[in-house]
Image (cartoon, rainbow, N blue to C red; front, side, top):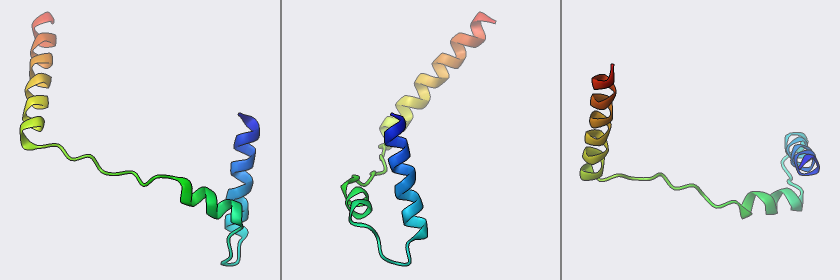
Length: 64
């Protein structure tokens, strides 16, 4: 685990010290990461989540 972290930090250092040209290993690392997509909830799903949270709050309030 420490070796992986050390390798990653060395890559970051190389990236910061680069003068516009990236090392092949860094380029491959950056390209291999999948892009994170933003999750979208429908209005119905948001409403259901909000109602469930209100029920949780009501249950907590009833206990107090």
